[in-house]
Amino acid sequence: MIKLNIDIEDIIAVLKKNKYFNEWYSYVKDILESPEFQKRKLYLHHDDSVYHHCISVSFESYLLASKLHADKRICAIAGLLHDFYPKAWQFTQELYEKHPDAIRTKRSLLKMHGFVHAKEAAKNYQKYYPNLIDKKITNTIKTHMFPLTIVPPRYKEGWIVSLADKIISFRTINIKSIPKLLGLSSPQFKTSKINH
Image (tube, rainbow, N blue to C red; front, side, top):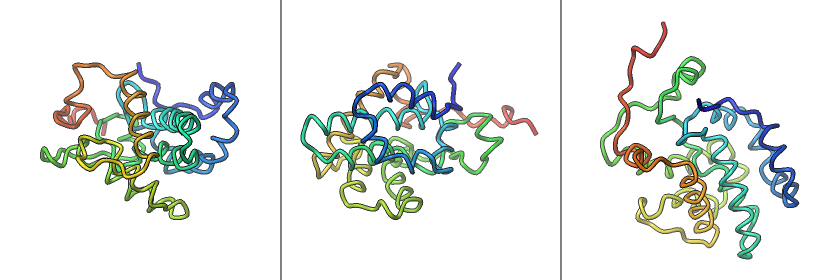
């Protein structure tokens, strides 16, 4: 069973053991505590939540940036917001009950999750965190799905977040679910799952 409603305290307790935690946390604390980002605890991502996945990508990106002499702040923030798309592409009963408007309906092939969510996340982060708007963050989020998005990252930080996302994703991926994860096939939205 996937534990979607994860406490930030549980994640932070694990990350605090790392000597780089305090600096990373100083970059992302306000985002982590915001109600809109907290909603991602209910969005599925592979065998995890978007919330936990994004924290993992953010911290991994931050650590890679430290080693590769890239902007650690940009990598931490863009890593955290890379999947900050507005609508969940996988149904869960709990999300439907708490935020029914946050569930995506079925789309045509080129408008499926794998092809559009990076651009949607870039637009969505600008809506909720206008004080963080930065050309490197925006480009990093928009291009993190390269080569699926065709346009490669423009900055070193974009390559780092893209790599970190793939590393973290492949740790939790089931090879048989790749078409679904790319948004190429998805389970039908079943109204029978919804309790009225």
